[in-house]
Amino acid sequence: MTETTDIYGALQRYWGYEQFRPLQEKIVRSLIGGHDTCVVMPTGGGKSLCYQLPAALLGRTAIVISPLIALMQDQVAQLSQMGVPAVFLNSTIAESEQSRIVREAQEGKHRLLYISPERLVRPDTIQWLKKTPLSFFVIDEAHCISEWGHDFRPEYRQLKSLRKDFPHVPIAAFTASATRHVRHDIVEQLQLRNAQKYIASFRRPNLRYIVRQSNYKTQGEMLLRTLRRHEDESVIVYSPTIKRVGETVLFLKENGISALPYHGRMDAAERQASQNRWMANDARVLVGTIAFGLGINKPNVRAVIHLSLPKSVEQYYQEAGRAGRDGLPADCVLLWQNKDVGLLAHFIGQVSDPAEKERAWRRYHAIRAFVDAKSCRHLGICAHFGETPKWKSCNACDVCGCEMAWLDAAPERKSKKRSRRSADSQMRGPRDAEGMILANILRDWRRSEAERQGVPAFVILYDSTIDNICATRPGSLEALRRIAGIGERKAARYGERIIGMVGSASSAAKLASSGVLGEGAKMTRQLLKEGRSFDEAAKIRQVTEGTIIETAAKLIEDGQLSFREEWLDPARRKLIDEQCGRLGTERLRPLKDALPSDITYDEIRLVAAEFRRRASKPKPAQAAG
Image (cartoon, rainbow, N blue to C red):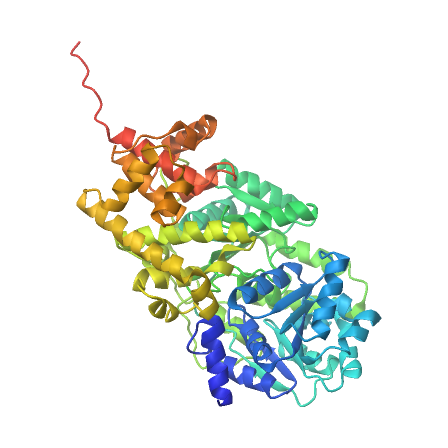
């Protein structure tokens, strides 16, 4: 078997992809070849695959140095789903568990081990790593090693000792945002030898950059318009201060939009709870300071909104880049005010070190030039990072004329009417009844499976993978394996269930279109009338509980099944019913946002069905007076 076959075989086997993205294959070959490597690749470009795939093939352990516990946990969860042995070592793990991980690493049982920079340079860590069969080191967020970078971290400077302690182990540096000066500094600090450098384009064509100068009043109006454009979708709002986080969350609540806070004065458990709820799609809007987001791997963020001027182009590029990691269109809206300029200047004035003050002023002038520019935003970002594109216009920024009528519309008055979803949102995903039913069934199952395993929903299946399943509707494991994002391990683990859900959606769609009960629906109705629980009915019918609830909701709405009291606590049922009356039942997400977080979509679906049944009943005629 040739090396090429191994590489492409691993890509298909673990990730479920047939082709690499630009530069990925070259980087993979560089690491397999044992070369020091420096990679600059934008967020969403597929950096992690570039070192995860070689690690899976080389048969030894790759050490990934990352400052982010959340990123370690998410990546290890994803790798485990794919069948690649991976672990992380950090302060959240008990001492006995840490000892076991170290012992297994020395025995060569892991392909990837994630560790923080502080722990890596400890003498005891160096000691046991020297007894471990290593393939290479990966320095993630490598720009943190450079004082010229926008996020310098002193602990990263200690990583230069890797070359001395492990002279024969290759080192690979990865970052999403590094200017030419920072790239040179990375190579020098890590003492990379004849490093193979791979610099991807900094252009993210699916992102729309929109920059608007605003004031206190207009900023709030434009924030609401942007959130209503992305009504049912995940959004990050970056606020300049902790105080503004609280004010913004309250402002959104007053305007009917549920949002979660995230900032440094919340205790760790509160921050983690906000992040987990947002990652699990229990809440769609997260308002945070710059403390939020580094290493967050949520592919379906449809908008990132900044409520102040970032301190650098690099910071803005990295934070805005958390939108659209799935490659679908997303909006990056920067709403800055004149007072931001004075605030940045004030903070720079407090810097005592002359060299650092000079760097801060350079960053300040660069971000001012970016927001004041009358030329293409994508072009400005590329030029800042040393790229010289041949194109002059992107058609995906406010300067080049991307569609922005939604932002310039007259202010909306508060009402019960829900604004329509964005055109891009309407264009994505299944459009027919069967596809819509299947998408709902798959997302409900994914949510339940993610909760059961304690991982983010995207770790189970990406939204794009669900869309592909809905588009192709595979009827066999062989057909399912051909879908991007379904590797061998996921096909083996979830394949039969997914194929069963495809069949259930088809049956439900036929039932809905014919108006006649199929055998499955008749059986479900009979089982529920007998007093069986949803779980019991699912096991008897050998389908998912979500399929049973979907069918029950249809039967309730059609008046063929009565809502049973034991299904739901009366107080919860009343609360959901009240929100149905206030917001309508056309979509469930607005209801979920408005209700307490512990109320599930399944509960909402059942009550909404009963609400629609009541609403469809003709009102009795009034006697003539």
